[in-house]
Amino acid sequence: MGSYDVKQEVTDKYSLRGRVFHKLREDILSGKYEDHEELKEVAIGEELGVSRTPVREAFRQLELEGLIQIIPNKGAYVTGITQKDVKDIYMIRSLLEGLCARWATEHISDEQLEEMEENVYLAKFHAQKGHWEQLAQLDNRFHDIMYEACNSKMLEHQLKEYHEYVLRVRKKTLADEKRGSKSNEEHEQILEAIKAKNAELAEKLANKHMINAYENMVKNGLNEAYKN
Amino acid sequence: MGSYDVKQEVTDKYSLRGRVFHKLREDILSGKYEDHEELKEVAIGEELGVSRTPVREAFRQLELEGLIQIIPNKGAYVTGITQKDVKDIYMIRSLLEGLCARWATEHISDEQLEEMEENVYLAKFHAQKGHWEQLAQLDNRFHDIMYEACNSKMLEHQLKEYHEYVLRVRKKTLADEKRGSKSNEEHEQILEAIKAKNAELAEKLANKHMINAYENMVKNGLNEAYKN
DNA sequence: AAAGGTACGATTGTATACAATAATACGAGA
DNA sequence: TCTCGTATTATTGTATACAATCGTACCTTT
Image 1 (cartoon, each protein chain N blue to C red):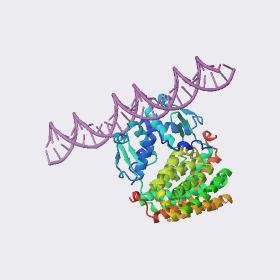
Image 2: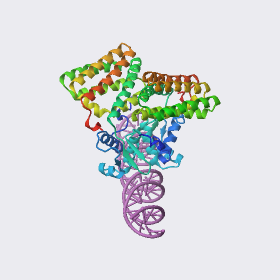
Image 3: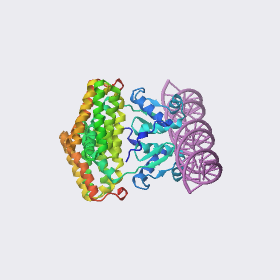
Image 4: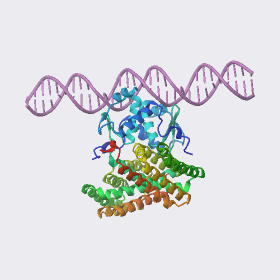
């Protein structure tokens, strides 16, 4: 259950609204716009070759994600995301990924367990070969499996949201060779804990996994876009 | 900082879109619609006396909150909220309120601390007098102060979202006399831990506070709307 | 010259018209 | 009778027209 909607993710990428939404989110997160910069519906629309309607719908979604602030009858202003925001997200995710691992231990299905094992095994291979792109995808997938395995629509929804939120940053991070291998080793440990039905351990490992990911990111220098 | 936008909350209540959004959310959460029931733009629009445009914008927001699922070119279907969802939210909130208390301990301002003390003091009075409505409001406010005091835009945003999400349920819960007093006692303990700069303790107490709130709610019987 | 008001322009809010898509029903052919 | 294709209809996607609101510049008044 809750898995036939995977094809279109949280918000569809093919309608004009979806495209505008993703484009604007990407631009805001990548620092294209100044903080507090005003976004005008017609200007954005002309830039992307669409009318105001899809732009407005995208604005409403961005507002709910906290990326822009809409003042009624006045305008939409970008809120952006600071270095501290990224840190906070990782701290929050650390807790939630832990909870997710705990629940996943209790509810994971045989199929999901099998896919996890395959994932870790494959990642080991790609890490050796230096296939960073595949490694990043497997990393994403590992977490997605766990999100689905935790058997909580709410937690899954939340974690996927955060995951997508910091995806840009993470992509850069995983491009670091050592972290790529290290991350997969941690995945393996989490997997072992889940297989051993040791929920406490799985939670702790998942907590640490996030903290490590964050610290590695800081060590390697945050993406320039977040240096504000 | 981060407080002059309080007047209009997360999404404004006075535009047509805002009204539609709040109405639909309320209706979905209160169980007016069946699970998987289709929401048609024109029907909703006619029912509320507005055109499709504000309805569509509200739909897009509800989708992002996970309350409906929009299948492109097909329709919008309510996802609703189950008894398990409520439980999961409380578990998630337990962790996040703990984190919030920890951070609040480190960052709370003198003004915020003072308002917290006043809040607890006043609540004690209203609890004795049996003024449940005021007690509920003070309870909400206590948490809001802590959210603001934690000095994290991200965490504050997230907790306020969850808070609003379960507000309907909570209102009923606090109407229980014993819980009203007990809840305020717990607030006082959290406040003491914050004043003593004991972040560890504040976190643990806030964790427990949420769990207690949930268990009390279950004991008193969940709102009928969530019995699915 | 300063203060206040008014009119104009720019921008968002809402409604509606039109296009595209999907579901359904119906009929022709086997 | 069953299957496939087509036409019809309902519904959403998008564009645009019109209304309401806000900001600003200019003008009037003192």
